[in-house]
Image 1 (cartoon, helix red, strand yellow):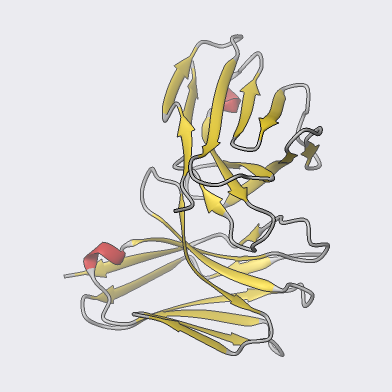
Image 2 (cartoon, one colour):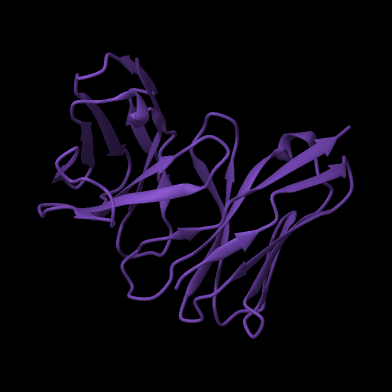
Length: 115
Length: 112
């Protein structure tokens, strides 16, 4: 149980285009989802907290107009990187929690490369 | 502020025990976690411990918590080559927001 999927697993896009990454909880309802960014050989940096049906809460320094987050249902959150630039290239990981447990389950990550 | 520190690298021989250490600063954390990340993959929750516990054992994994010193350790018994990965310590901090604060990760290398 407690499986989180992400799609796509890898994406290459041209500079200036937008990319959407999906995060799904497959066998549980996720009241809260989190989006992280991970640079090579570094830890995870929390970008935003997403609660179903409400606006995401962004961490300091994260541009909300650049990283659009939508959490339209209890099993799906999306992260859209708008007008992507090479410096947005990174590993993006989502996680989900039921809100009834302190366990947080992570997706397999999406490798974004902007050329 | 909230901060979690880990040593960056540990090398052990197959069959030995591995001990990965972590220190944290937020004494109000209620849960502390250990996650495993294999190359190119997401994080796998290994175990977690409630802050009022001193120890938790789960098969080959033993977590020790010294709340006074804000020190957490993960011991892996009979380490196997498949245990080679990056191990992240995390705390849930204060405020009950669900947010996790991660350490830098410890790369565990298991030599045959």
